[in-house]
Amino acid sequence: MTTAPAPIDPTATELRTFAETAGAWPFEEARKIVERLKRKPKDEVLFETGYGPSGLPHIGTFGEVARTTMVRHAFRVLTEDKIKTRLLCFSDDMDGMRKIPENVPDRAALEPFLQMPLTSVPNPFDGDYASFGDHNNTMLRRFLDTFGFDYEFASATEYYKSGKLDAVLLKAAEKYDAIMGVMLPTLGEERQATYSPFLPISPVSGRVLYVPLKAVDAKAGTITFTDEDGVDKTVPVTGGQVKLQWKPDFGARWAALGVDFEMFGKDHQTNAPVYDKICEILGGTAPEHYVYELFLDENGQKISKSKGNGLTIDEWLTYASPESLALYMFQSPRSAKKLHFDVIPKAVDEYFSFLARYPTQDWKLRLGNPVWHIHAGEPPVIDMPVSFTMLLNLASASNTEDKSVLWGFLGRHVEGISPQTHPKLDELVGYAVKYFNDFVKPNKVFRAPDEVESAALEALDAALAALPASPTAEDVQNALYDVARPIPRYQDLKAKGATPERPGVSVEWFNALYQTLIGQDRGPRFGSFVAIYGVAETRALIKAALDGAHV
Image (cartoon, rainbow, N blue to C red):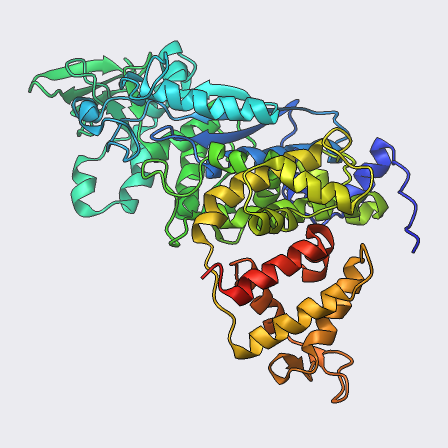
C-alpha cells in the first residue's frame, strides 16, 4: 500500500488563499473579523475571554481560551500576520460572593464574607494567596501557562481600582438614563423598582450592595445610596468604589477595551443584544460573538464552578494529554457535550487518529483537521502504534498498576519500541494505567458464560492453540470468525458479503468475549488485542472464565 506524498508547505499568501474558503469553524469566525476590519480598520485586534472565579476553574473555562486561540490563529493566517493581535483573559474577580461554593474545605468560615468581592474573601485553600479570587485566578493561569497559551491576564479588581475603567464609568454615569432604558424592559416589575447598573462597595462592610440609587451626578461622577448602616453615602463611580452589574459590565468592558471578538456560553445568548446596546451607548462597537453550547456533567446537568461538578482541568490531565482536551474543545462547539471521565479515552484515540492522517492530506483537508488548529498549524509527527483503548484493555486483562507490564506486551508485539524510542507512547501507557485503576477496575463486572458461550470459548481455546507461533492480528481475527460462524447465536446474515453458507459474525460474539474474559462490555478489535496480549495469556483468560474464577 502506498500513501500520497506529503503536501509541500505553502507560502503565507498561498496558505491565506486556502484559508479563505476553509470550512472549519475557526476560519468562519476569523473571516467575520476580517470583514469587520474592512468596515472599521484598526491596527490591533483584541480577542477576549471572561472568567468568573467564584469557584475553581473547570474545563469549560479552558475551552473558551482554547477555542478563542484557534480563532485568533485562523485570523492571523487570513491576514498573513500583518495585524497585531492580543488575547485578554479577563477575570470578574470583583464580583460579590453571592453563595459559598460547595467544594471549599470550610464553608462556614466563609459565611461572614458573603457579598464581598471575591478578591476580599480570604483564601480557604492551602497556599499563600491573598484571597479566594486570587487563588482561583492563579489556578487558571497555571494551566494556561502550562499549555503554552499566548495571553494577557486581567483582573477586574485591578482594572477598577487602578482607574483603567474610569473613563467608561464616567460615561456610564452620563448615559445612565439610556442604560436604564435598555435594562428595565428586561426585568420584572419588582426588580425594576430597585435596579441600578452601579453596585456600590459599602464603605462600612466592604460588601457589594444591590441597592437602589438616590442620585446619579454625571458632572461630579458620583452616586448616592443608603449604606448598610442606614446612612446616605455619596461615592465616586471611579477608583474601585463601585462596580457595574454584570450585564452592563459586559458592554462597558467591550467599549472600554475595544474588544473585537468574544465567545460565550448559550446561557448568555439572550443577553447578547443587551451587551451590544450598552457597548454602543458607551461609544464602542460591539464585538463579533460566537455562542457555544454548555458542558454537561454525567447526569446531564450544566457544569458549575461553585458546585464543582464535571471535570476539573487537573483531573483531565491526570488521565490524558492537553492535546486530547483541546480536541474535545474543537469538536462541535455548538452541540451540548457531556464532560465526564468516560469521554476521555475516545478523545485520546481520536486525537492520534487525526494526527496520523495529517501528513498525507492536501491543504484543504489539513485546514479542516483539528490537529492543525490545536497546534497552531504545526502538528507534531508522532508514531503511535497502539490505541489508548487497547492499552486500557491490556491493563484490564493484566490487572496491573505497573507500566512495565504493559511495555512487556508492547515490546513483544512491535519490535524495537521502548519508552526511550516512543516517549509519547510511554506517556500514554502511564495515563492508561492510572485511568484503568481509578475508573475501569472499580467497575469491572465479570459474568459467567452460559452454555452456548462456554462451548464457544472451548472451541476458541482449541483454535488459538492451533495457531502458528506469534500469529498476526489478522490470523487471530480469522480464527475468531471461524469459531463463531457455525453458532446460530452469532450469525449475521445481513453482514456485507454474508451468505447462508458463510454467514457474517455479529458483534454479540465479541461483546461476550469482553464481558466473560475481561469484565467489560466492549473493547477494540479482539484479534489485535490477542496479538498484543499473547495467545497463551488469552487462553489463560478463557480457562479462568470456564472455571468461574472471576465470578
